Image 1 (cartoon, rainbow, N blue to C red):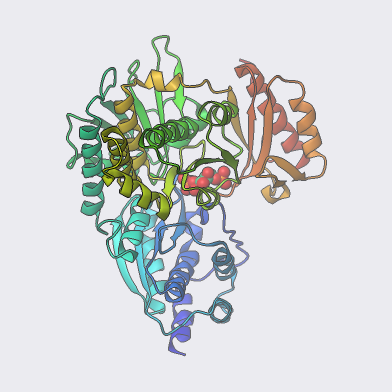
Image 2 (tube, rainbow, N blue to C red; image 1 turned 135 degrees about the horizontal axis):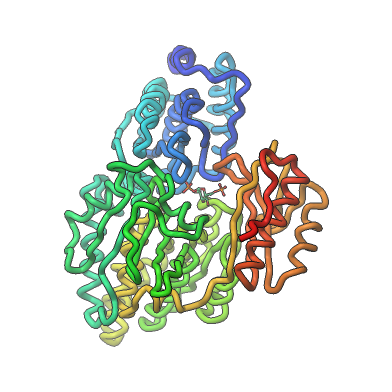
Length: 548
Ligand code: G16
């Protein structure tokens, strides 16, 4: 058939490096950009096949998000804006790893197994981040889509959540919004402005000044565009690390701030000023500030999750709604946040493996599912039933004015949320809306609970897949004996916890530890990292507890 001949012809221009093995990680394929040409071409083919099979538009984002600028990657977007479904991850791996000669045959097998109507039309939306390599890789991707005679819309530079949003808008025939950048900004600005009007008693000690670290990436560019739609008397954002001179994610961005537990470079140091950091493709956000004693305070994904869940809970109570809300976290969630959510907010908490795909899926179990990874990646999902009930309550004349008002606020809150995936800009606007409504400073928010001191480390090893885990990654099953070692180290500290897992985006093993004091958390993390190094053939220097 014509299609399959075109695959082979295209493949000869996008040859797979011999012996290169690609694995579909936490959020798609990710590695050095110079190894990705063949992967992009094949993901163009795969996206077209998925579009044919679902009879809907799908998306492909070219980004390596928080990774260094030299890396790149690909994230695939399902018709309703979610991440690619698990069985298609398997097809993606098979296609990425097929030899050039076998590719045609592999595609035929996928077509058969997934029951793809090869003659159906295909429609693919694509976008890219600001990495220099993304431009060339976009062409490889397009070649793949074109080989399958798919239609293409190239949005050029977008944040990852913007592309997810475009795909959902298009497939819902604009019921979710317009599938344009302007449409996205207008929807958010309208909801944000409306929420300020509705929360007319807001303000108080609230400060509308924000210093924003754009990670020298696409998020900075998009926030600057959004500012044209925003009433600056409500929110005054100064964008730093806008890409004009710094390098993407280098000593800046949400991942840097979260892991290093210090402010991004490239930002003025101002006491008590609210700062936010986006990651490289603007799907994560963390807040931070420096207090009058020059101490750094991080408000990470856990603090965002509990703030948002607590506020929604209040609105549900005030509107008399019976909807059930739940919070989804991962093993990285600080123990204090889990305790605060379940004991103070009385919100049920679920723990799943790392990766938005897992959190998103679990959040669908609730009427309203709030999900956040500690690294700042998260959003809120509202079931159809929840959206309908909230809409009805906002117009129900049998309810009191206050009840109707709370339901109306919730309705606008839904409009301010990107339900497809974590979205740094939407999350920022949600947080600012809540802080305004509660008349809170960033310090007041921070005081809702105190994080247990924690440390995250990366260990380079010969083969990170030597580490295997279970129980939402909280227990290590391989190498045999490592979990016993971790248990005995943890037993030496108070209120301590530690786990290890292979990263799905970087070639490292991640180590997490928390304990009652900063010294204990650091010591425990380095001790566990040292044992990981010993038991899984560490590369480079063995991690040791720093002396100062
Ligand atoms: C991706 C995923 C996140 C995950 C992060 C780190 O984020 O979307 O869910 O937490 O990678 O994953 P790992 O620990 O496996 O490396 P991003 O923002 O880099 O796309």
